[in-house]
Image (cartoon, rainbow, N blue to C red; front, side, top):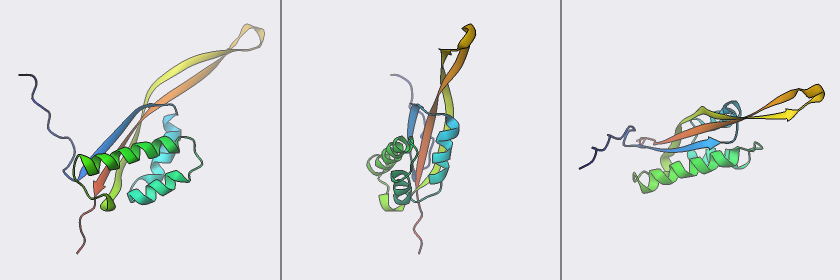
Amino acid sequence: MGKKSAPRPYADNEAMAYSKHMRVSAQKLNLVASQIRGMNCEAAMAELQFSKRRIAGDVKKVLESAIANAENNHDLDVDRLFVAEASVGRTMVMKRWRARARGRTGKILKPFSNLRVIVREREETV
């Protein structure tokens, strides 16, 4: 028996990849995600490959995963894919402290973020 499967939340021409607990603040991750929004997937991969930001490598892995999901799970054409959405969300924050002068403490916040990338196949132009 069991539970009935939920309907697919995305269109037939879309594929998604999700990464949890990336060790970067949501603000910094959103700077990288905004660079690839709306881009062709090949151009987005090249943009992330040569980006100087530390988290760009992890964003590239998520994009590669979304492309692989589109190709293997949904039979989409890889050459016509583009980044439809790249959304960032906050998750937990590890709180640490460092000893400071006169018996005080300095607060250290170590934020984590989530990233969701949705790729969509472009319609054929005639």
